[in-house]
Image 1 (tube, rainbow, N blue to C red):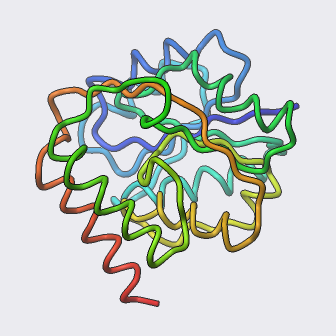
Image 2: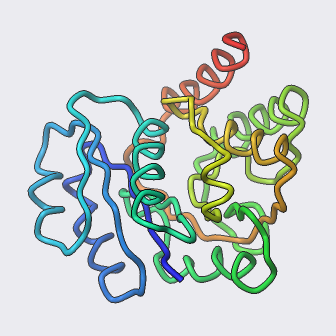
Length: 220
C-alpha cells in the first residue's frame, strides 16, 4: 500500500525543516507543494528526500493541495494524507488518521481538535470563527462534523479522484467535507492534537476563513 503525505507550503522556512525531519523515518512518500514562496522554503525542502512541486505564482492552500493530490494519484497513491508545513500537527498521529481507512474501509477521515484530545485554541477561533464556520457548514453544506476547518485528513485514491478541490483558498476545508457528503463517501472523524504557535492565529486569518466560505457559497 502506497501512502502519500501532501504538504502545501508557503514561506514556511522557519518550520518545515522540523516537520520533514519528523516524517523522515515514517513509511510514507512525502510531497511538498511550494506555493511560490519568497523565503528559503525550497532550499530547506531540497535537503530532504521528498518530492518537491512548485507553483510559479502563489495560488493559496487549496490549489496547492489539489496539485499534490493530482501528482500523488499519477504516482499510484492508494491513500493521500493532507498535512501542514507549520508544525501544528503531529507526525505520529498520521497512523491514527489512516487506521479507519486501512482497518475499517472508510473512504475519508478528518482529524478533529474537538474530540477527546484537547488543543489550546486561540480564543477568537474557538468562540467566534469555529462556531460560525460550523453553523455555515451545517446550514449551507449539510455537513455536521465537529471540526469545520481541519487541515489534517486522509482519503483513499477513489475519494481523491472524486473530490476535485476548486476552492484555492481556506474554504477548501469545507469544500472537501461537502463533496464527501454529496458523494456519499464513508466518513469518520478521529481526535487529533493541534499545536498553536504565535503566528497565523490572528483575527485577520479567522475572518479570511469566513470570507472564503461566503464567497464560495455566492459563487455557486
